[in-house]
Length: 350
Image (cartoon, rainbow, N blue to C red; front, top):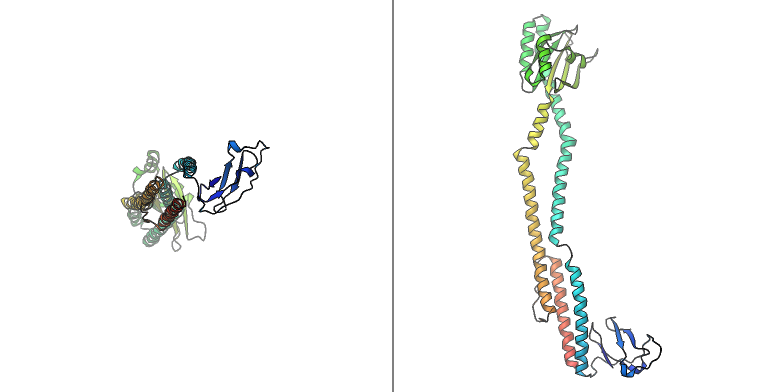
């Protein structure tokens, strides 16, 4: 009985009288494929079922009945087609490569946005507060130097003019001068309409509030002091500078809300959105280029291999695309040549 391996087409001449039971199986010496041999009914011996096989193997070029070859090849082809159909059905349910690339693009964009948000929350407020402190210190030192001489000669009119001038600087909430006895001799707000109505009314009725001086009062021997607090619905940064030669101190307040507004203005500016848009556009463009360079050659290669599986063995396989795809195409091309060579050997042997 002639048996042909379904994987490599090697032929074996089996002595069916030495098969114990209804069937037996053995491994192909060439490819290791398991071959199942069923004993013809006319030669069944009725012994107990067994699975040991004793056989003699002939060479690959041994003659055989063409009808048996055709029947065996048809049966093997149907089995292979069924197995390949099941496997291809399972593979067809996979996720396309474009989806993987899209997920990678989304993760990259979210990562960049998260890093930018972290840098903003971690460093920008600290940097802006440092700049506010520097600006408040410069204004307070300049204010203290301009009122020192008028205080020595008790020219309070000039002191009030200087306090009013400082209070009208951009971003300044108020400017005040306190003498050595802790009395506010000059104090002006830049714009009371920015504060709550109750607070604005109290300032108009009672003058500059002493609560500011008490909250950021300089201790003996101190030259300057900073304090952040909320007053009349506004968050303020107060800077107190001592006047050692004449006694007393000056206070300058800066609106923190203006600083926060400046930060938001920078973050929400057209430049920021343009940069984010550029990053997103670059990511989308990269996504389409990569997807096209990978998926298109794979689709073409899949179409060619499917046509080869249907019998177009002379169809050319052209390696193109990235290196990995080219290597895959070359492997399919080698497999195509091997299949053609195996079929030629089968035709010659028959």
